[in-house]
Every structure is written in C-alpha cells, then in structure tokens.
Amino acid sequence: MSILVYTENWDGKFKKLSYEIVSFATAIAKEINSTVTALSIGHVADDELKTLGNYGANKVLNVQDDRFESLDNKALADAVTKAAQNEEAKIIIFAHNNEGKAIAPRVAVKMDAGLVSGVTGLPVNFDPFTVKKKVFTGKAFANVAINTDVKVITFAQNSFDVIEADNNVTIEAFDPGIADDEFVTKVLDTHKITGKVLLTDAEIVISGGRGMKGPENWGGIEELASLLDAGLACSRPVSDEGWRSHEEHVGQTGKIIAPNLYVALGISGAIQHLGGVSSSKVIVAVNKDPDAPIFEAADYGIVGDVFKVLPQLIEGVKELKAQG
Image 1 (tube, rainbow, N blue to C red):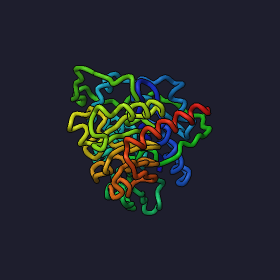
Image 2 (cartoon, rainbow, N blue to C red; image 1 turned 45 degrees about the horizontal axis):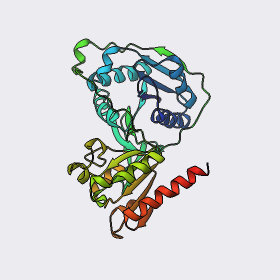
Image 3 (cartoon, one colour; image 1 turned 180 degrees about the horizontal axis):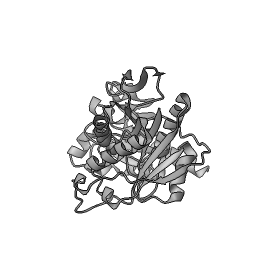
Image 4 (cartoon, rainbow, N blue to C red; image 1 turned 45 degrees about the vertical axis):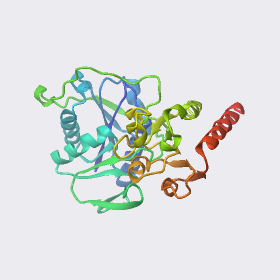
C-alpha cells in the first residue's frame, strides 16, 4: 500500500504540522514496506520541498497553479484524488485541522474509501487496518477498523514525534488537470492576522475564562503569553461577553487546538471547552474551585485564586529566563 500525504504550506513554507504527518506516514510505510509521496499545492521553492525528504518522503508531487489560492475545497479534493490515483495510493493522510477536515470526506467519497478522523497514533493492527482515536471529548479511546481498499485518515496534531530521516527525495511537477468550472469559490478580499502567535500554530497557549472577572484583568495573561511566546485564548463565555475577540475562542464551537502546553486560568472546564483542547500534550489548570471539571482533564492543577497564582507564575518564568 503506497501512502499519499497532503502537506499544507503557509506562504510557501512548511511548518511542524506537515513534518509531523510525513513522519507518521513514514513510520507506517516502514511497517508495510511501502513508500511515501507528499502532495504540495501552491508556490513552494524546491529547497523547501526537499525538506519533506528530511522526514521520510520519497517523492513530492508539486502543484503550482494560482487557481488553488482560492482554497476551494471541491477543487482541492479533486486534486488530491487525482494524485492518489496517479500514485495508486491506498492510504491517504491529512492533518486534522480545518483544511484537512474539509477535504478528507470529499476524497473518501470520490475513492469509495473508509474515513477515520482525529487518529492519534500508529495503526494498532494492519489486518484489518485499525487505528486509534479519541472519543467522548477525549475521555476515552476507540479502535476503528477500516475495511475498504483505500483508507483516508486525518491525523491529530502533536500525536506523533517529528522524526528526521535521510531520504533523497524526488520532486515532480504534477498537473491534476482540474477544469476551471471546478473552482466555485471566489476570494474577494483577504485579511491576515499579524503581530501575534496564531492559536493553531502555537506550541504554548495561555487561556482565560470567566474567573478573570473582566477584560481589564487580562494584562497578566498577556504578559505571561508574551514571556512564553504563547498564543492567547479564551473560553466561549468570555468571547460572548465581548471581553476578548471570538478569534481567541477555543472549544468545540471555536478553534480546536493541540499545543504542547495549555494553561487554563479561571476556566471551569465545561465539556464543550474540553472538547477543543483535550488533544493538548500537557494541560495546567488554575481554579479556586477544587471540584471544577477542568481538573479532571488537567495534568497539573493549582487550586487557588488566579489573581494570586498568576503573578507568581509570571515571576517564576522571569526568574527562569534570567537564569538563561
């Protein structure tokens, strides 16, 4: 079974997420004695494309077509399907993010493939092909078998180590032959967030809830985030009240994130919130209520007044940074 990996780029550059899913695909390929082909859509320089070989890709299919800049899911799904057919791929892997979750189901339908979303590790069995994923907002795991000939999965961020390899990757120009009428999305204007760490990219996220009591108390959270080069987030009640922007709202109805470290300050931990952050590698919670649901999900918990604990956290980080 050959493996196709859809690797996203951001302004012509790959990020850790792309290298992680290539590493994951390479580990599977070793188990089944197969190869890994990465599909890159967009204007990416050859030197950048070659970095995918550093994590196990044997081949990179390079699609450079300005029409795909509209991020039309229908056209992207067609391109991935054509690439999979070209490579006779039996396993197709996407990242479990907004783009991957939008394209993967379309590809699965086109290829009569079974689909499992949010996979969190290597297959637990290859006959039948069985993968593991979180269920019940991260409270349990399920092993799901895919019995179709072609298998499509989306892989949860931060679920696999980035492993360097030493491959002489081959780069091939690829034209999926998508007709103009397949591009149904028109982009009229683009506004990009600049000057701060994006939540979906952040390795560390500092988040506040209603326990912060008001927008005027966010200075400490912003300072801690600045010290740690972290992203800023909040719970839904905070954004609903207008204390913080909806762009910072994380949870099932907001952004789904998977940082290495998630610090929840004054957040009770409703199930909808935990559903969006449960994939974090480490969760640290600060709440004065010892029975707050957040502590059930937290790896480390501090029962205390956030307005007393937060200044101590800031001072502790400053001391550590001063020590080099």
